[in-house]
Image 1 (tube, one colour):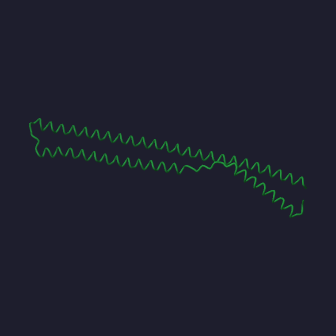
Image 2 (cartoon, rainbow, N blue to C red; image 1 turned 30 degrees about the vertical axis):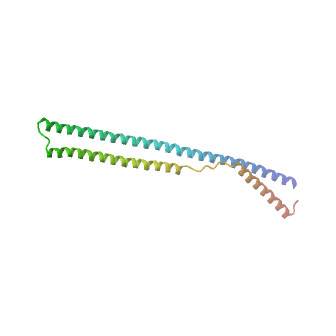
Image 3 (cartoon, helix red, strand yellow; image 1 turned 60 degrees about the horizontal axis):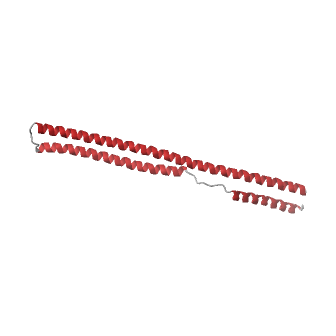
Length: 176
């Protein structure tokens, strides 16, 4: 009977050692998986940041081009108007001045509208960056590195528990 007890204890020790090794490997793989998930979340966020930055630069360039074109057209029209009025030997009258002022007003309103739209785009860009950051945080996981000492202690306590349960059962059955 003593030989079977020793064999049973040996099997339990081997089983506990194998479980310890498997749990340690599983914890290591889980930690690697968590690190990979965080790397992917960061890479995704970087790509989305770059895309948003490119988009806002393109929008800013479009608005700058529109503003330049509007200023160029307005200067050309005013020059034509002044040339026609001055070329005919006419002095600029009140109605002519109001018409010229109307050109300035329209140009100012257009530029103001462009600036307002650009500010809206910038505001949206900033919200998108916040959303990207929030998305990265949501995709990231907490890293739980494997704790070999805790796994070993758990395996040792499990083995001790099995041993004492075996001893208690033997005593209850009256076996030495």
